[in-house]
Image (tube, rainbow, N blue to C red; front, side):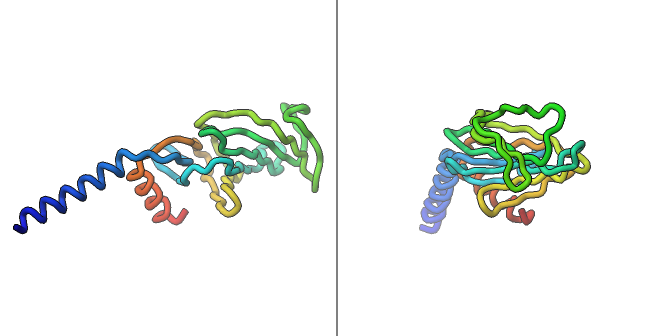
Length: 166
């Protein structure tokens, strides 16, 4: 009798694990190498920003993105000073507000991956939604990814990121 209960228990646990592995959920993650640094469930129309200190101008720069249709889309940028290589006609509107030059309504689809590399003195930050602010390490390559993960891996990544205190 106890063997039947153990078998039934093992069967149910196996079934639950199989379902957790098969069910896919949309996610947003930041990886560096093979390590997931940040992990969120994908939410349509959520905005995020990448902010850094320009290595030559020594001024803050910020690019604004939105998650749309399973993709990353660049919506705008803002910076303190024009410099070499900065286009003067990107987006629909360019204006100055509170000491920042804004270029808005860019609406450029990036895709499902956005790669970036931090510098020694660039102080890169990832800002997600209204509350999340993550400092990126110096001299490191990162990839921002939109994709599908199994529910089991999503739970695992979420726990690992929380355990690291992110």
